[in-house]
Image (cartoon, rainbow over all chains, first blue to last red; front, top):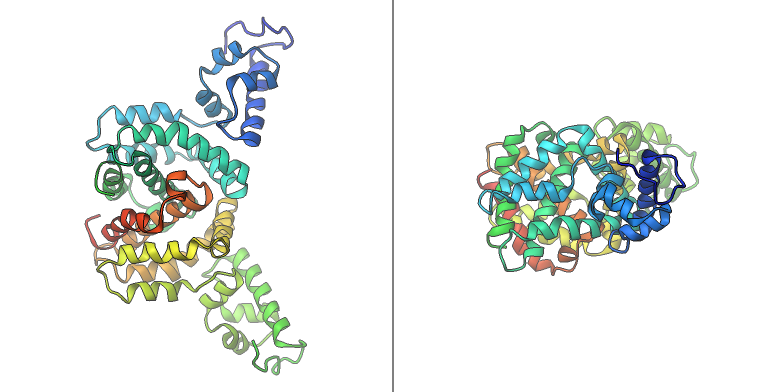
Length: 199
Length: 199
């Protein structure tokens, strides 16, 4: 952000406003066209800046999406950290990592916004589906057993999203009031079976 | 509906309009005050009819809620049918019964409306939480193992809601395109463990 940007276009007063224009263009594009059809290049064009500048600010389409949606962490980084420990115990680690993140309301808020969009509009559901499929489930599938890895990763995702719905949105008392480690112990084996057991 | 109603009040022209007035009053009351604080008596008062008439039309607060929210079936009836087979295999039967219901878009629509409300507003989330806790999870808990039955039923609920989100709302391909029985085989054991296994 502190880099000397705007040189190439000269149309904007500084990097902060340029960054804001890129994020505005990205939000509009993702909302209208989903995740897959949008590229760093098309967002740069929409924002009237050089694609190299978008790359310099955000590094990748995923990071651009993460910044545009104000996610507290890039899913690829989070998943990579969880998967680094290997397949054994990955179910518990995944549940623990997500609950640790989501237990902070300000970190759950952007996730809630994505879910809210998806239940409110087809376009937002498409955007979320494409983002999850490409950037999250595909990475989780890499650690899953070789038969039907996408099905396995999607089952795991369904349990994790349902847990978030029940604990943070509908706030079912038995789950909202549970200690994080109780949920890790209860739900971890489900994720583990989906990823590496018999499904 | 065809019963000679309206006799007691004499203020309304016929049973259909009376029934509609009761449902309107029920929707307003549930949305504003949640499920627990509303009674058949209070809805009758709001609608300007005798409570006995509401009982005659709907039979119970649950049935009144089911009619007001246009649910295709009363959860108590659905859960009773599933639980009639006993604890063995209850996980698979619960998944099969719900997917059979939800695979029809017109039967999923009122469920989607409840979820949409819950992610959009605190009041609707409270209404859904109170309804699920009192009329659905409590009944499922009756078949669960004696240690922590509400926790068990809530875990099962979280997986079922997450499956609905992933298959019907976000439409993750691997789950949206899966055969019902594939999902019964994959998710049934999760529900079974939550209800009767080690959690």
